[in-house]
Length: 94
Image: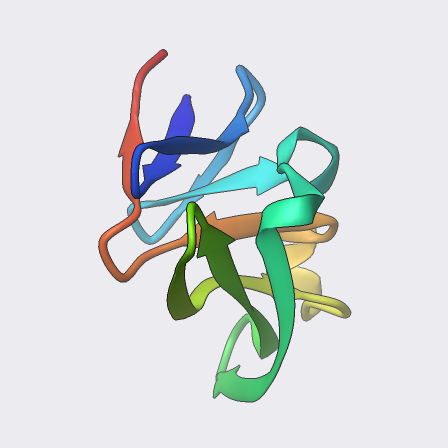
């Protein structure tokens, strides 16, 4: 799978975990130089507290376009150390 935004491949991996229709990429498959820490958090009742990254690609910024769970709840352990995308990020098969 590939995550693409603003003409750039942000992440690519054959090892994604799908939860609620979202592909969670291993953190090591993500181009970290394109991520900017965000202060935003949200809470999912069964996954836990999500943290966010903004994307900085080719001079453009996509705020809070990636999310991850530092300490997911037991029911969501399979997404620990993984990142998912939204807000216009295209996730397609490689």
